[in-house]
Amino acid sequence: MTEKSFVLIGAGSTVFTPGLMTDLASSRTFDGWTVHLVDLNGEAAETMAKVGRRIAAERGAELEFVPHVDRREALPGARFVTTTIAVGAAAGWRADIEVPARYGIAQTVGDSVGPGGVLRALRHVPELVAIATDVAELAPQAQLINYSNPLTANVRAITLQTGVKAVGLCHGTMHTLSKLAADLDVPRGEVNAVFAGLNHLCWLLDVRRGTEDLYPLLRQRVTERAGGVDAPSTREEGVHLPVSADLMRTFGLYPAPGDRHVSEFFGWYLRAEDGSPADATRLPWGLQGGRDATMEYIGEKDDLWELLHAQADGKAPLPRTDNQEAERLVAIAEAIVSGNEHVELAVNLPNEGKIPNLPPTAVVEVPAVVGAAGITGLGVGALPDGIAAVLTARAQQQEITVRAAVTGDRALALQALVLDPLVGRLDVATGILDDAIKAHGPLLDRFAEMESAR
Image 1 (cartoon, one colour):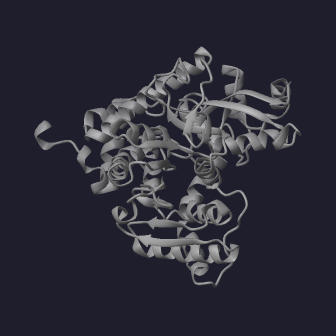
Image 2 (spheres, rainbow, N blue to C red):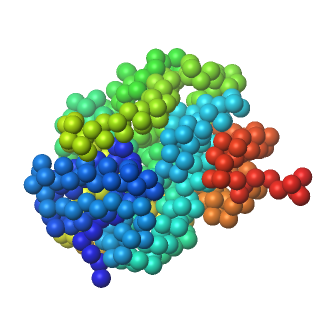
Image 3 (tube, rainbow, N blue to C red):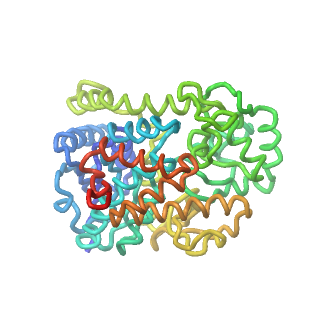
């Protein structure tokens, strides 16, 4: 039996959790439901519960918010389980960027690919598999929806190791499409698009207004507005982005979601023109703004908690309610509960032939139909050969990363690092792994080199 309950594991997420609670409180579908907020930091879970109660009262929602430290208390019979954990918290993310930087490797985000993405997976996969194992035991009918990065590796690990129904959600392609529609001077509601690929390197296969193909106009706007290697630093998405423009010229399709993510999949954008390490304070291709935004976001975590405490105590206004990252989760849950089907722009789930020229076990980002039968990914056909080659190599590297994380095998962890285009050398991979072990301590110490092997 499933209960009318959401379980949010990683409820201390300072942006996602208030958004999810606001969206749930705005939907009459979930009146009478209970939201279980789980976090290892009990004070964080209690603070979020207080914020949730304020949101529900303000919106007249019949929602109960219950804080937990132990997820097994929250899980029995759950209908939906959402994971937003951050193993190592903000300090861990900062180390994922700063450790590779000692070896001349600049990253703009470092949470999905690049050496930072590998290190993050080595920490997150074991915990997410443990969570999914508990879900399989205590809430076997639940739909698990993961937001934690690296999204692709995490969902692959869950589906590889457990029988839980699991998908990953990311708002990136949705934001890209909104920005492109604005640049094309077409109302967002009139634009229909198909994206497919891997999370954080998804490709726009088709974009139309009714029967009108908008790709020619998109190519024209990109040609007119996009810069190049010397483009000024930017944080805004749109047709002006130089890396996305360069990738469209190279591979024929426009990528998403923005240069700060897609650049990390390649070995050259985050380096100087001669291939040498780039100055991390003056990145080429306009990428400095993306890196700066990441570092600022990491540093803002303490300030966000101060605001949340004030909101919990009624001393500050409640969070803004527009453009919430959690929006699609609530729409998906509504469709499953009500049976009113709709198509989602992008869901991450096992390939199984949806993109026939990518590995069947890869976790791909494709459109999906959502309804009473659950979440069903849609086949999009084969991708252009060049794009398929890039994505296949990345999917295979991520498979090695997942197996390293599951087994604790140091040799596999080094393979995952050395195969990343931003690393490319065994001595650099070894230095990064050993320095990361020192930085992260118990979270990675199972990958330490054994004394007897030296």
